[in-house]
Length: 363
Image 1: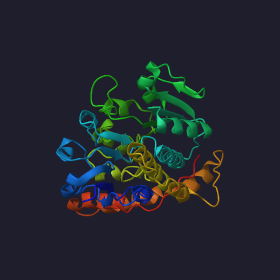
Image 2 (image 1 turned 120 degrees about the vertical axis):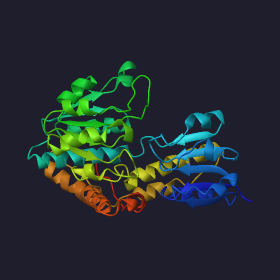
Image 3 (image 1 turned 90 degrees about the horizontal axis):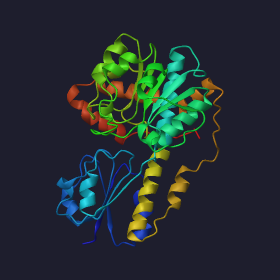
Image 4 (image 1 turned 135 degrees about the horizontal axis):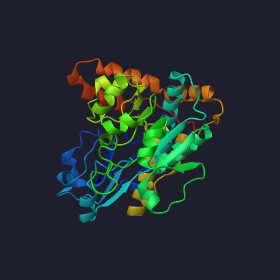
């Protein structure tokens, strides 16, 4: 029997890119992310996953898998140490959806500005984490005329040079002074620079009255229960894309948010294609074959370029509203939460699996 390549059905065009390089020597099988076909793992040599599939000794033991790729930025679902010990090649797609998440942050800020009948110009944004996403958020915020505060202790320790428009700020000072607070950090449970519980009652209480908290990072860095009272009191605003108990969503919290979305901030077409492209490149390098990379270029090509004007915030908001439809995503999530609770998990996954085509416009 031919070796098997298992690909999560939500990784677009990867199979099409790999097939020309395989010459029929391997069989590609798609699977739904939460239903990994265990009976196929014995013949599997390469496994491609997204964040809903846990990859550890429990599924990899006694298999012939030599290559694992996750078409995502987050790595919490992968036991990377086990893969290292077993000499299994592991690749990720960090940065693939950075622009998509940055657009989400920009739109959330524009929604907040409209709700408060103000402009973003002259306001301050506090960005915790200055990696792939944080750098893009900072650039867009700067172009919107905002003061950019950044906190990233690991980068500071490396004496990284930050852009001249960035004010490096200690975490407590950032939380106290920023009009908008957004975090883009990896999940780190313990040790130095832990991010577990980074935002709790103490942090929310110190935020400025009327500040916006945006959560598109890792689910356990922000306490939902501690945030709720501040939203009820209308002291803070929130845009939440990542939920503590996914695929279950805090219905009470979702109903109080400016945006409440089903973990789709990074779910643009471009973001997914970037993830697939990285997976194809790494597979080709490892196995010494040449996937058809032109498939990805053709997929994202546009006949007419969209040139957003950051000085026209109303126009920019309308462009993002049309391209990303995050208000519709919020409505759809709230509709699922109005159903009996036993349906919520299935409906949450369905929203993500059947997520409509969304295109990026910011550059």
